[in-house]
Length: 436
Image (cartoon, rainbow, N blue to C red; front, side, top):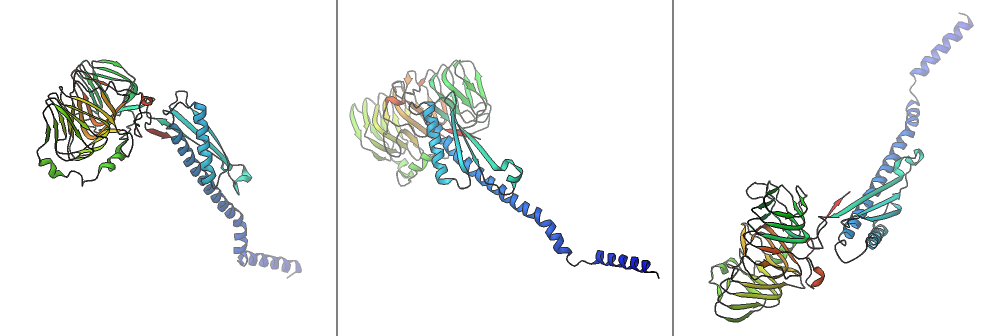
């Protein structure tokens, strides 16, 4: 064999051995894969950092928006002052709760209609790998808008969430009744075809009439912004129910006892406390409830045939199915508690499994200053003289509200004219809803 042929054959053999030899191949392959692997790890860290920064800034923006929106209906702060307060809240939260954001920038804007606040928060982050490619993960920006549930303070809510055609009406207005709520909003949470039902020839005046379902209307004179399929606002006073859950007060046995009657002309007085038998006031008797909280059971409070009841700085709690019934010849004048856990609450019902009937037929019920809260109550107002018209403000939150015959219910909103506070969630302290 010639030297050339021998050299060529040796070279081919060596090349074949090189191809078949795996020694060092794994190390070389790992070295080649290491760079993209490290890049993926760094990118995962960048994504995690960006998400963490966005989450904490969103939480801060949400809190600032909700806090500042609640001030929209309170006091006389200018939009600039509200925006500055919102920025201060956000910046304080950033100082104590932002771990991944770098020098966040906060802006705040109040809507022209003063019904919403928008908070925007932006920040740089410190990416490791993605910064090389100038990706969006070097910057994070979030915003939150908190809006009042309606541009008007809330003065009436029918809390039923029913969707059936027969029981979905949270608010009924019929016959020749009047509902005057010129400066506030009325809401029904009913989800059916008759969430708000207006039949006959009634008059409705309101800043806003909002129904979670449909509005069933035939006749009437309407002066209100009528809106169907609004988001339900629920029961803003639901947390108050826990304040009256003490079952040691007026157990059910008291319902079997005969009522306490005030049935001769004269003035009578009851201190705050538990009144576990029904109270009947009639025939010219005048009963005054002393300052504080009164717990009523049995058939509750019945005022008829010229009876009169009154109370200043009081809360009346209706327990174990107790209700109130004020007939057309009764007189009543009440102002709600000014302090304590039930401040601002005039009448409150302990919830029951059945819907209980509460009736105001009185032709002398001009002073009902405070909030009437009947979570499982059907409230009927059917007198012929104005109800609550002399009150600085009145708020009604009930399962169902029925205003009929010649009744005239007046819901004033002069909150500054009284020292009786308005409970959180209604009046100028209405619900706030959040949208990102």
